[in-house]
Image 1 (cartoon, rainbow, N blue to C red):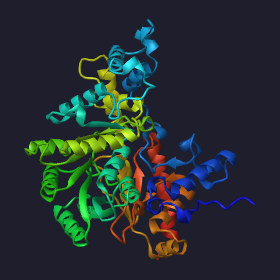
Image 2: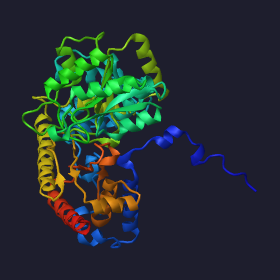
Image 3: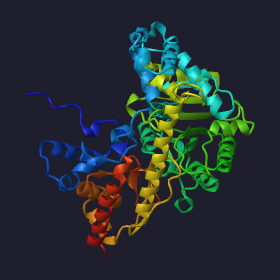
Image 4: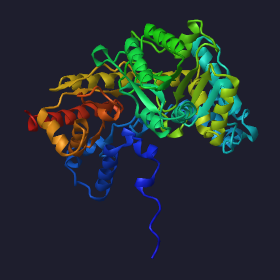
Length: 494
């Protein structure tokens, strides 16, 4: 008889068991099962017959995650031209390439390949990323902020997530080390804190003021955590907000920087939605720009800024590119960060190239500039219209209130559920918003994430829905959502 397996859930790392990641959680797993069912048994689900035209080729509409190209967004031509030429450099030797690719894409590819030893995009690179690409990213940051950036401060990563994990690994020593995180928050933060064995110290964004961040609440939560013996190491700020879509006012950012300086906290600035601003009265300011404009230099504030190629108008999630810019850390600490980065050897080269392009797109006078700007503007303007259409639709429904999406890619409406629905959820051993999201999926094929996966004020219930379905599909999405919600509320009306 074969010996029993020595591996069971009961003897796995408890930190792994504690970790949860809602945007790929229970409801999404169920949606994937339903998608497989539709492939093998077409017409077997109620929404498959009702909306085949809307969702083809996917009858399940994944609005759970910011994955633009999976829902039909097209990649930016210039970026893809450069990537193609870098990955197949023999094209640069062919005469017909000049008629197929723009001149500035050709010159940019040659420039990038010159920085890569042997022009080998399939080889490992420096663990921080290729130096020439880090130079390009630093130049882009300098142009954006008006303050100098240094390539040695840049760590190119496979998207922003590995950078977040790296910093949690660095800062969290045991369960008494805490990280201040916004509630609601992107579950990457709660998951990574759990995996590394730390304590999440929540501060609540104020839904009534458009998800405002109050310094007084930060101080209260910090003092409360310290009174319990928690050593709070860092403050996470997500700007623009995920899942909440707010854009911080400049004055608020000044206060946050002062707070971190006075309290000796590392500022972890998640800025991956910096291009996604949909209101005229707000603009993106990086926390590094704010800190430097206040006169704070390298010795004053430890600051880590995260950026990704997955969001913005580019939406290149599958290319896994991003970076973190690290300032305000001593040389010995930086050596430890480099050591952690080197364990993973390097990030993928395609993602590295794309990160450099995102921070240095075509400029006025370049051959591709007009087409690049047209593509960028069309995507961002369409996202703004989609956000407004969904926001208006949510606010017209009984029991739903939804703040304006000033930026990012999501809406986070509050759902005021009848007591009968809450009791039905309890009987099903589900959180009420998870119960609602599951019913929505099974009735319409629309996948959203329950607010309980992001954190929320106790006793309130939300869902997070992306604004990413293509614009011509939005009216049909709204129609299906409205029909479901009205039926749900009628079924469970008190």
